[in-house]
Image 1 (tube, one colour):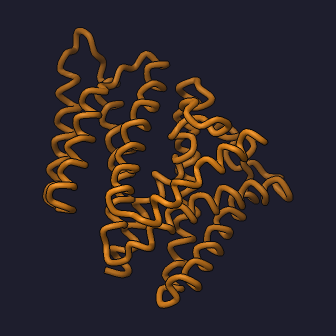
Image 2 (tube, helix red, strand yellow):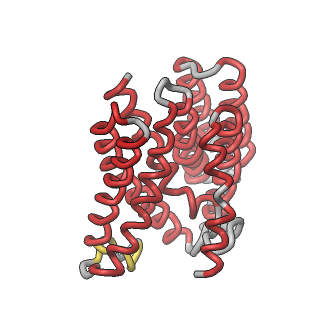
Length: 260
């Protein structure tokens, strides 16, 4: 517990990155993509599946270089997605040395880690850039409240095959907690969007838990406890940001469909 608290304190500078946004946030998102993909692919290696790091790192570089040069361009993003799919499938052409799973794992990493994470940058470059905080508030708020609610009153298992300690009561508490914290953010920081923040908090709280369980599902099949050891007491980047990565696209599209 002491190690986790110290590690949590060490992550406080990340709040400054979110506060200032802009280039620091772009760099942080790119770093999460590079490190997260590497950790994710290490897990696949444990299953004797060999995704291509070269393709993944190349596509991450193209994505963020393109953003820095041209800003957000939907056509560029669609082109990047097409190129990612094509490159991943072509990687499977070497049927003598590779399996179809190698190509699919490469593409999964690009979509799940890289594309999902990129939405943090997209949120920061909308006219509602402050709402990038909802990604962290919903993810971490849900995680914290699910833990304490489950510890206090949890009785019914939520997904015992994926995460034996998670309970239905904890899940409900996490979703309500994320809704409450996002509502507080809306009330004090963006009062004109108070009701929208509540909606996004509820959506984010539910999606956050889906992200956590998705990461757990992969880890179970990969036969690993943590994706890495970069953050003492927390594991790797993917262990700490699995929920954040999952929440970011949903918050972005809530903004796109409700506010823009």
